[in-house]
Image 1 (cartoon, rainbow, N blue to C red):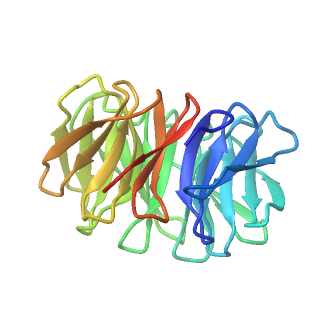
Image 2 (tube, rainbow, N blue to C red):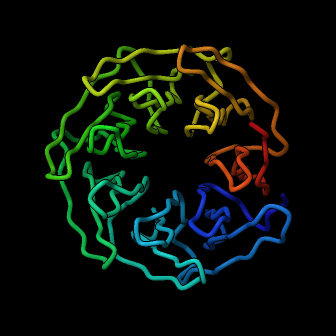
Length: 278
């Protein structure tokens, strides 16, 4: 699907559509497979919307890293914005709020559907918290790109960190897997990682160690799907570590999500949403 702009993050919405960010154009897009995409401009348009996620309130929530805002868009296109310093990753929590990473501030944020925010400091500096996801244990799990670790925060704000065994792994994407663990990608090491809720880590090297894996999501087939930004590929990994790779139409794959048609859709910054059947 051709997109008028540079898609970066993508997620499935409660309305059976794909919602995505246009990072360089300052817009949010909505696409139904087989129909023309619809675009919603942001004001101001220079905030660089990045990650987008479905919220517990029936709306879509997204981060504007450069603009320092958390955005909310309803399925009819009404946009709200709330100030938040250097937000990047965002995900719905088990407590009815959205949780987000503050990339440059070494903190994790929380925002309610009404826009009330709170922040929890991490135990060190220069960690660069990146992507965040709800875990099977009722906590939020997140990657520490420059801390070379995975973090966990309870809904009460208690933080734990788990170092990664590979130096310079630089984890980015993370998601809950079908096996009760969290799965993440190591953009610096060219690996997929698995961490169970006790903190035990297993690494699975990709065929191309310079593939620069970026985002990961759980598929409807019981496997994990990930983008290889450096190689321009889509990959699939089973919970026992078997890896397959697939060519993509377009360049610079970033976010990915399962669409309303059960396929995996990849946000290609070159100007496409590319569909891959599962």
